[in-house]
Length: 211
Image 1 (cartoon, one colour):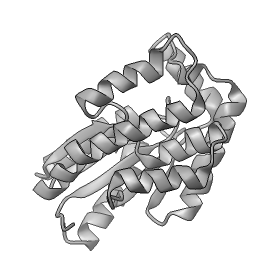
Image 2 (cartoon, one colour; image 1 turned 90 degrees about the horizontal axis):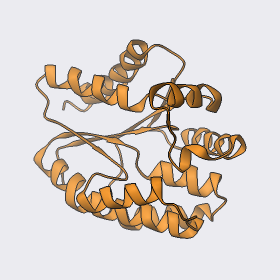
Image 3 (cartoon, one colour; image 1 turned 180 degrees about the vertical axis):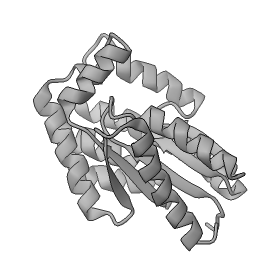
């Protein structure tokens, strides 16, 4: 599949500052006259929005395997309906989470078979791979304080215990060491400093590829 677009995935635990970073990057890229699409997993499609609400607010405990398969279903729709068409148009796509989140949360966090998760992710993503992955790294204590301060309430995922998030962060760390396209950004920096570093990574890639 030949495309002219550019796919950026923003990864990290909730509270790391992903949403703030995405807004800042989109603004800077649009000022440079790039066509930018912001999306997210789960929730980048109407189907995904339904799954997002179910996963975050269900009153019933969802089995770990079911949880991953719901994310995979969302990812499949997201790739087909949103990502591939945007890549074909030549857009710069900024996605809040992609396949690394499933590997970190359901693989490392929940303890599911990581090789199987990777295989299913490749299948549903239909050869699509982010050109660059920006991993905003932050410890769970700081992230939790931010979430409570900013929202006051927590989703089902955010109510998990500290050891779960330590496994998730360890997962993101290991993934970052295994993928050349991952750029790690210190989440304790100011929002402006985080945006500066992330934007520099993106522009270096765009300029090297003459995009």
